[in-house]
Image (tube, rainbow, N blue to C red; front, top):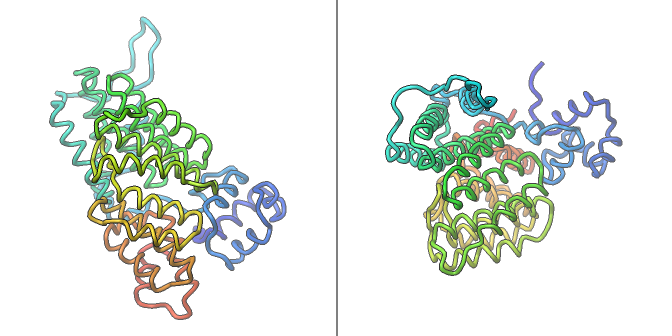
Length: 399
């Protein structure tokens, strides 16, 4: 039997497997039966993120089970293996032993990588991530985790930050590939590693990734609460260094995401982050992330795209400078702009932004369930498909 290719088909299969009628599922999810019926009948090809999360909770599945988000690297895998990364994250050698008893043999062997060289490799790996080069990154992540663990074991707390950043990278990659549970474990490992060092800002930075993983699991309240709690713990003084502002601002942006997905006003968080960005004055990179005025504009556009307020999305997008963002950050912003054009019934403008995102980061684009949803919506609006839309349909693997 072929894999269901639309949200509606996956929804119907899961609902039927659980013996639920459309009315029963609607009641459990707090949604209308009409929405469920339209999705299953193909009269609607997408719905709000909040509605998807409610359906996922009611069906006791991951959101990715409804959106079809899974690893779609195809020929771009470059010999990499998700299972190899899984095995590195969940290595039995990490299991604790009882006092007085030998632990399991370590899974790393050989000479440790010098700490400076390890930092260089981690930075290069993060650059690949932000460029959307997921295939080559997947091929090297398991080995990088092993190197970081070996160096940490030999060097001690001085290598805690490097090990934390390696796990954080693995968590971010697993989120992009739809492996949310594995991402959460990797982020937890990163937080534990950072706690062995003396850099509280590094510790806070990995919490932002953990909050992102919780969001992807539809754990909205926990995601927002965690990001806010850690942001409060590391709230910077007016004399704090720029790196501190970058991490604090990103924690608040990770609190913003679940708030807008839940349909609530993002103004409080946006105002706080805008203040931090104004102090920075320009884009500043720190702890494998960045913050600046363009970041605020991009996240403002994201917030109002989720809230389906297209005029405010397009107003914020006018303040976004592509050169201030990484490749996949700008491509993600283009999806928000495309969403605004879809909501405004402007399919040609939407397909142009989608095609621009595809050309910037084709491997990343293929992984995005939002891209698939928007391409489907553009196809649905058009009476006759343009060559560009046909190319987009093929790029995301729609029937």
